[in-house]
Length: 136
Ligand code: ZN
Image (tube, rainbow, N blue to C red; front, side, top):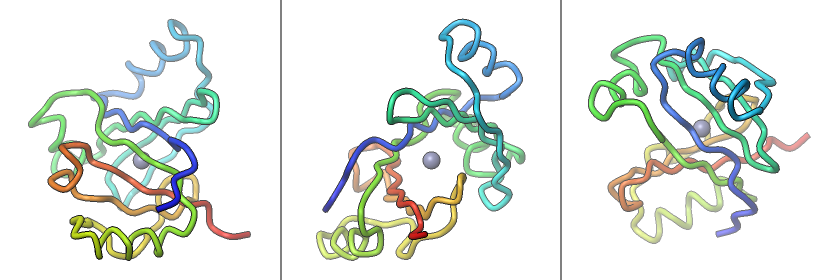
């Protein structure tokens, strides 16, 4: 396994419009991108904190993964994302270790990253995402 840093923290919010002013006006961070990820049924807003990002997630569909998360558990930390080198290699390694994978092969996430999720049942309750920048 080769983790380089925490790429981002995903935080589920009911409304980006309501949450962004807290991050900008109270915490003094700058929202540098808003992006809809249709496949995940979310709209995302990104803030940079050092090398790590905060990714706010607003559901665009109550039946989507973030919509049902908020329905069950309320707003709050949704997932933790590690930047890794060699995403597919890491997934193969984790599968060998018996870790339950949501994605056995990488898919496209926000910001053009290749991403894959590990199942929270295998990660002590934390939905964990691995990300890798696609090779240029
Ligand atoms: Zn994420």
